Amino acid sequence: MAESVVERFLAELAHQRRMSPHTLAAYRHDLAMLAAGSDGKPLETLQPPDLKRQVMRLNGRGLSPRSIARTLSAWRAFYRWLARRGMLSVNPCAGLKAPRRPRALPKALRPEQACALLDAPAADDCLGLRDKAMFELFYSSGLRLAELVSLDVTASLDLTAGEVTVTGKRGKTRTVPVGSQAVAAIEDWLERRPLLAASDEKALFVGRGGKRLSARAVELRLAQWAKKSGLGQHVHPHMLRHSCASHLLQSSQDLRAVQEMLGHASIATTQIYTHLDFQHLAKIYDAAHPRAHKK
Image 1: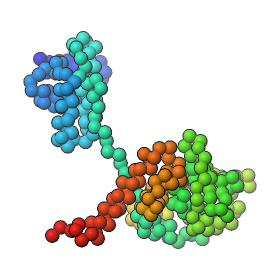
Image 2: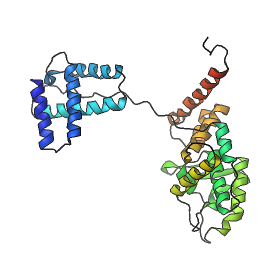
Image 3: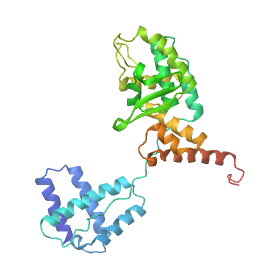
């Protein structure tokens, strides 16, 4: 019977592979769920359409793609075990996949939140001016964190033209615009930079020791800056990149231009920001459209 086959499978996992009781209990539960939906058929006789229907049922019950994938993992392990013992004519798990997980939308600040963050007064010292320059540049140009910390003073910047040249993923170089407020903040920082930077250091942004600032240091400084600004939420560097992309799309609707600015290899990556834009428009519609309100 299927139950005895399952017990033999679980016993082998317990004794030979030393699986934890928690994992064994999860496997037992997942295989019991499979048996319960199989209309009394022995598990070793199920065919691919049978398991496909089971996956559809799990999806219909509202199980998350992650939970379904975990359940499928247990089923695959069981059927591989049966196949190694010659107890299958066809492996019903072959080619079976869990539903795709919905792609998580990147978190972005609202335009007024971004302004509140960047307009927060900076300390009038080297570190305060440096931080304001970094964060203005993040939001202005949509840089990645690794791109920002790799910037050099001479090779990367053309403040007269309002441009910065960065090397992104796969070694691809691109030149992106720098807004006027970011230019002004960088100029203020460059006046103070010699007081902090080592004489032979090329990095645009340096730490207390005079050497190139690390990515982790930038993350910590931005979190502190957001807290002092009273924004009321954690802000990480990539959120400023997401905010830049989202706000550009809201105002320009030029997907290709935003793709080029962000350095995305595929426009599909940039299209994720159209979903953020749609959420923004949906909120405006719900708040303002006369036909959006329930009577």
